[in-house]
Length: 405
Image (cartoon, rainbow, N blue to C red; front, side, top):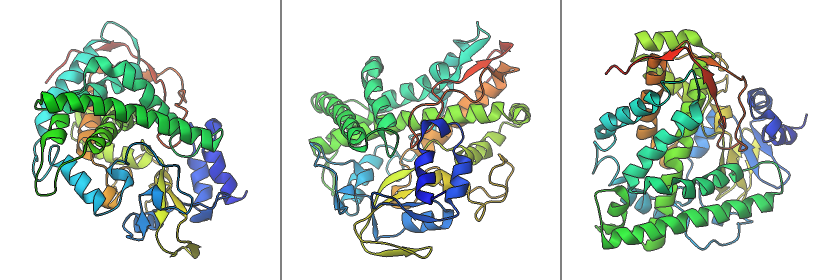
C-alpha cells in the first residue's frame, strides 16, 4: 500500500482503537509526501531532529499556502522566536520556574483531595465510566481553579473544547470544513477567555489569568488578544490532553492487571508507569502545524521551503530503532524516552502538572478499586485522531476501598 494511503487510513475512525500497526507500516518510509504537498515524518530520530531544527517553523502563516487570517493572534505554540519566547516567558512566570518554581508541587494536596472526592462519589456503585466520573472532572476542576475560570462555566467551554478536539489536524470529512469549524471553536473559546480576563483587569485575584493581565516587566505585557489566546490555550490543553492521558492509562493498566497489583504494593512505580504510558499510549498523536523555512533533506527526502510538515509523535515513540520491543508496555524499562510532550522550544508547557495529575489519579484508582475490569474492550473512542483517547471507559469493580493517605 502507498505510504500516503497508510497515513490516510490512520485518520479513519475505524482504526482509532489501534492505529499502531499502521504506524509500523508508515515508518518503513520515514518521510512521506502527501497529495496536498505536505510531508509526514514518522520515525523517532527524524522527528527529534525537526523538533530542534531552527529551519522548522511553528507559525502556519509562513507556509506557501497559509490558512485564512484569523481575528485573534495565534497562541505561543503557533509562533516562532522571538515572539514565542516573549509570550511563553510571560505565561510561564506565573506557572513555573524560575519565577514560580513551586506552583505545581504546592497543588499536590489539593489534587489528592479532588481525586479522593471523585472516587468517593463512585463508592456506592459497582460500575463507573472512568471518563465522565474521574478523568474529565479532575483536570477540569484543577485548570479552572488555576486559571480562575468559574467551574460552573464548564458546559459552555466544553462544547468548544470538544469541537477543537474533533477537528484538530487531519481526519475524515471535508478538510476546509474541518478547518472552519476548528477556527470558529478556537475563536469562541478565545473570546470567552478575553471577556473573563477583562473582569480580572478590573478586579484581579491570585489566579493565573489575573497574573497574565496585570504583570508588566522588562519584556513588556501581554496585549488583550494575547491574553485571550494564551488563556484559551491553557484552558483547553490543561484538561483535554490530561483526560486522554488518565483514560489511556487506566485502559492500559486494566489490560495489564499485574501492574495494578504492583502499583498497590509499589506506589513509586507510578512514576515510571506514566512515562511508559506517554510513550506507549500518548494523548497527542500528531503535531500538524510545522512549516519548512528552507529546503530540508531528511532520510533521503528533500522537504521544500514553505511545505507543511506533520510530525507523527505517537509513531516515533514506538519506533523499534529507538526502543526495544516498542509494542510491549513495560514501566521497568531502564530507559524511557518518548515524544509524549513534544520537544524543543515547544516542549509541553503543562507537562509537570499533567504528570502529577496522572500519577495521583491512576495510583488512587489502583489502590481503591477492588477487582476492576473492563466492560467493553476496545472502548468507544473520541472522533479525533490527533488528540486520541476513549470517549467512555466503562469499568466494573467489586467495591471501593476507603481512602488512606
